[in-house]
Amino acid sequence: MPILGIKEVCSQNELDQYFEKIESKYFGNAKNEVAYLQDDLKNLIEYYSINQIQPEFIPLKNRENFDIDKIALQIIEDGLDFKTEKQFLEDLWNNNQELKILFGFKNIAYFRKEVIIAKERVG
Image (cartoon, rainbow, N blue to C red; front, side, top):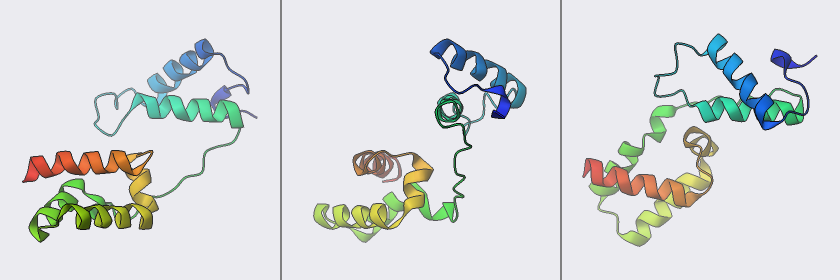
């Protein structure tokens, strides 16, 4: 039986209708929350429409270890040169699946960009 009544193959118009219905029913008060992104909900609806299974839930542990400002501050305080910083970020990226999930980064370039922005903010 389809979850939330979503049928298997949906047109964009149907996906939009499901989104409106689900958002108003389950996320009405969350629209102004920083952590709520409409695209996330749309992606979940589309995923289910295509796969007809619930997406795997991946819990995020130790979120405090992935604070971009803390990472940027550590780079600044340690005085890392470009090469060392690059290796440091690559090691973080390659060894922490949670980091990729938490920020939704598609590749390391997005992660590096956010670190650069954070360095300017905290430096």
